[in-house]
Length: 293
Image (cartoon, rainbow, N blue to C red; front, top):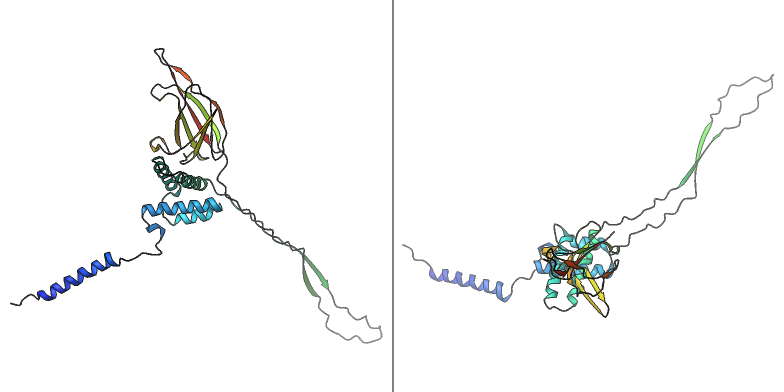
């Protein structure tokens, strides 16, 4: 019976262990030039933020769309909206106000990509061609006198020539390219008073939609009154909708509400006085709906 070569086995195990320690701890492999689709979830968020910042600086929507396609998201717009909500939620937890700006850039890019892209107008140059065809015949000799014998000769052929003259070739005009924008200003499409005793007194509800009636997260809402001003964002309460935001109004105070990106101004907003079935009075709420045309 042969003996097991323990010295060789121990040497192999020691070499394997040292190799693992070196490759995992001392000098782990560094992955460079990886595709964006292979990035970790938090790195994908950083990638989207960088694309949104570049779009905010250049306004190049096709390039931003091409860069986001490298992430392989099923719906890039929904991915941007979800990230904007996460950023706003973390900002509400005590992070610096700079995070609000980044979230607004991400939401603005989602809004721009959700709109239908403009199409460039291309003019096709034309040229006017005049065809001038003429028949050119060779001259024949005069007939001989009657008393001179007639010699038979071949009749000259008629030669047709065609000349083409190009008149006034048109120089191609420069093409018109579309300039991406953040979208048209929002219009106030709905305003209703709510008398629901189950809701908090003076609850102001704001709903923001795009032109396709999809809710938009990360939209800043500005509330002003005599001697005061506050801002809040949509998308912080995802269970109520991406484009939902609310605010508690002080009774008997008149407010003006608008969107920071540009919108109609809802003036004279006051918490209405409501009454229950038993005759008790309470302050109701207001619901405003803003939508892009």
